[in-house]
Amino acid sequence: FLDACEHCARICRVLNQPSGNVLLLGVGGSGRQSLSRLSSFVCENECFQIEVAKGYGMTEFRDDIKKCLMKCGVDDRVQIFLFCDTQIVKEDFVEAINNVLNSGDVPNLYATEDLETIATACRQLCQSLEMQPTKANLFSAYLIRVKKNVHVVLAFSPVGDSFRNRLRMFPSLVNCCTIDWFHEWPAEALYSVAKQQLSGANVELPNFEGSLKLFQSIHLSVEAASKQFLIVNKRNVYVTPTSYLELLSSFVNILAMKRNQVGTQQRRYKVGLEKIGHAEEQVSGLQQMLVEKKPALEKTQKEVAEMMEVIKVDKASAEEVSKSVAKEEAEAKEKAASTQVIKDDAQRDLDEALPALDVAVQCLKKLKADHIREVKQLANPPAGVRLALEGVCIMFGLKPVKKNDPNTPGKKIDDWWETSQKEILADPKKLLDQLFNFDKDNIPEKTIQAITPYMEREDFDPAAIKKASIACEAICLWVRAMYKYHFVARAVEPKRIQLREAEAELAESMAKLEAAQERLREVQSKIAKLESDYAASIAKQTELQDDMRLCEVKLERAHKLIGGLGGEKARWGENVNQLTEQLSLLPGDCVVAAGMVSY
Image (cartoon, rainbow, N blue to C red; front, top):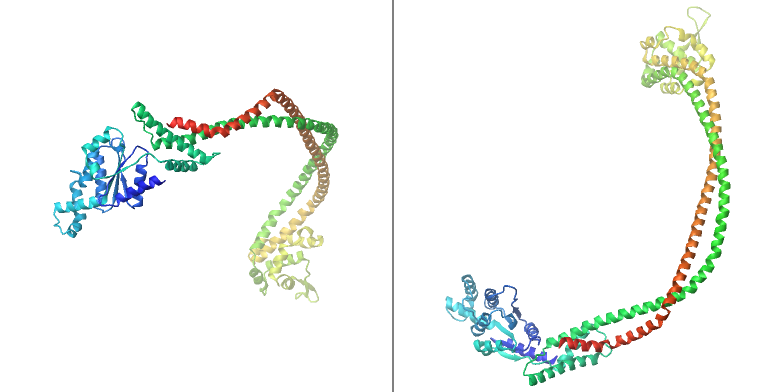
């Protein structure tokens, strides 16, 4: 507002003058400190102010003054020293301020190291002033710079004897300062501050402009009453801007509190009326719901009874199928046991021939193609080699070559060596494949009769043949193993036939058992589905019954509510109207209440 602008302009004008100090006189809350800080900002200067805390004394105050003056003299920075009468803990503070105003110095303020810092910083200034850089001249130059940069702003209240005594004891407070009086706020200021405060608080008022003028009138009327009080009772009653600000803040707080209180009561009555109306609407709905749910409940009960009969029949059928399955399962287990006995008996007989067969197979695995090629290259093979090859030729069903007997003219003899060279030893790899893959289970009886004489010969022995050839030793072992395996397999064959028949019967029994088990699973699955449907129907029936009971309870409660609160409905409606009217009158009531509290 305009009055604040005028004070700010005055303070700025004084601060821009050399050694410009200002004494602001006014009651508390008139804006002295705020305008001082604003003026410092406008002048682009730093505002320095002490912070009084518990235990704050003269030592701390002198340190703060030294800090401020060092900034002015050493750092060559302009400082606005703002000091209020509320910060005067001891009267010595005012004496120090008086010295700063008068000379820019406080006696015995600086320590030795501070003086050295001052001398270093002001040496160049001393030279520019054409002064010898002595200690006295350096400190004088420092004081010149301090007086140029420091501006003291005193915010004092003219009320009471303390201010009068201080002016009498410390005349520099008046002589070295420009005095600016802060009088009562004009009507324009009151209006502007009220508008700013209420707009910032987002207060909703039916007549905003009228409310602002009402606050303005209240403050002005209180000021007039205080003057009249002074005339009548010879006593001062100070009406400060702080009281006006308290009026505004009290109004905002009281209005918010009362609006919340009255609004809460209004909402409660409205909710009660809504509940009564809702209960009246629900009564007809609950009655309709009971009518709709009764046929559905009867239908569900009938379905549950029918489903229970079906489940009983299916459970009896499942019991019969389960007995049949158990019987067939026992028969299948008995047949499986007898089949296993036959199989084990046949396997024991086969195990007699298997060791010899395994020895022959291991020996054949060690046999290499080079061993067979060595036998083929023999021009006149030993008797053991010929004997082993004759045995393998007989086992493969090969025929010997007929040649003339050199000892008996006109007689033919069997030459197995030529057959061996052409059929057996021609392809070593093929020979090994034939030996490994020989059909030992189907050896012709004719072949067994032909090889039997060799089995009885003493020279048809693997150990004896090994001396002649390693390959022929393996062949001899193989021939003997095949011979032995033939007789064992022939003795086991009836047992094999019996085993195959038993396994066929077992497979047939297992198939019947599987079919019976499948039938049992189908019946059990059907029963499980029926029981699931039955449980769902029971749950639906229970839900319908619960819903109907709940509807009946709600209906009974609604009747009680409507019957008990029927007379309250009209009274609550009237209360809502009264509270609504009271809400509209709250701003005026709160203005009166805030005025009484603040003034």
